[in-house]
Amino acid sequence: MEQTRGNQVPIVERAVEALLAPLYYRAVFTDQALSPQWARTLVSHLLRE
Image 1 (cartoon, one colour):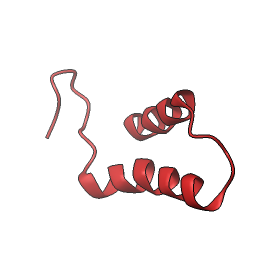
Image 2 (cartoon, helix red, strand yellow):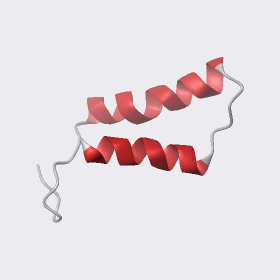
Image 3 (tube, rainbow, N blue to C red):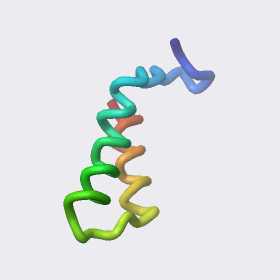
């Protein structure tokens, strides 16, 4: 499946691995803040692939 921009749409499993897993890990196991910039970085890494 492709978006109108021509990029491949990530499959759900890859999106969960790239976005939700780091968010949950950081929230549960570290004292680091969940900043909007950090979340944007996760998304940009996912969409680059």
